[in-house]
Amino acid sequence: MPPHIRTALCPVSAEPRTGPYLRRRRPDDGLALSLTVPCVPRSAAIVRNAMTSALHAHSLDRYGLPATVAATELVLTATKLTPEEDLYLSLRHRDNALRLVVWDQHPHHASPVAVSLCEERRRRSLWLLAAVVEDWGGDWGVGEARPPHSGTKSWVVLPR
Image 1: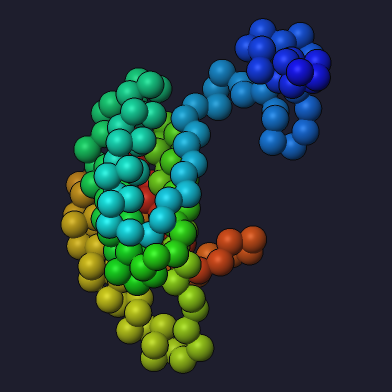
Image 2: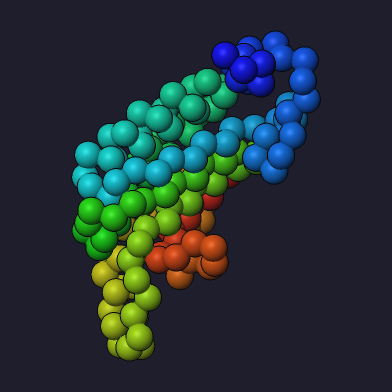
């Protein structure tokens, strides 16, 4: 086995980690979870389980119920609009707030009428999410994803 592979596998490696994706985490970085899952209904359970474990590992259990409800609602709504595509989820805890972002592959419509109708249907399907987030004093929204992402971006912020 080449020495660089052995070093990469060793948890107490003396060699410094370099590169844009290998920065050392600072103690105040908090929770950072990213998942790419297929846009199918069973992915909601995968996301819930991963989030529950991550929140527990970071002693953020207080966010458990609203965060899992929010993720479930966002994932299930995306499965109705972009079935069989990939779905990307990001969960971060920074500045005493939990931020959840879901990107789905739903394309942007050319017609303003179609855009309006699609946004209305998505918001209407997220009534439970809206109620939970409002109860927690948080905020949520939906919009077109900005590059490098494509599709639709849905987000939730839950304050402490």
